[in-house]
Length: 197
Image (tube, rainbow, N blue to C red; front, side, top):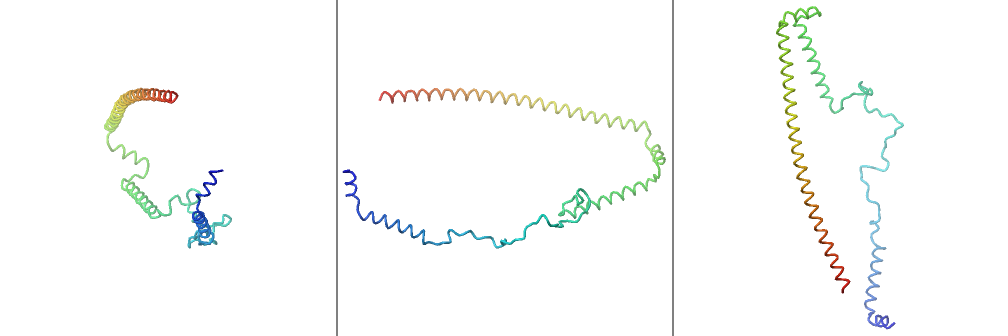
């Protein structure tokens, strides 16, 4: 009780008045301040609240059917020029192939056989075919040998890396165990010192 009476004697009316006036000032500034603080943020001018929205019940013709999958063009509309260039190139290649056929004078399968027989002799064709097959087989063999050699090198590297990482992990585990033992001993000595005191 004496403490409360002493505290009341030490409290000065000026301090109480200051705290009271500060509270009223804060209350009035919040209650009578700018109401714009609590307003909604301004909406962008480009979008009005009555913007026309997509209605799935209406039919919106996005593009005209042009064939292809789902009856529309398979090409991106932004690439129309590229599609036209590809079509022109295919037509030019088709015309070139037709011109080559016309120049060779092949009008029937019989003529094609006759032209084929008049070309390179059969023995030389077989020899060329054998050389092509032999070179292809040699290339495949070289590729397999190179791939096998590289695979063995990768296995060696992986084994060495695994051994290095294993020794590092064992070393780290030993260091961590030593640190843990030291911390445990320090904690025990601290606990003993505290109990002794």
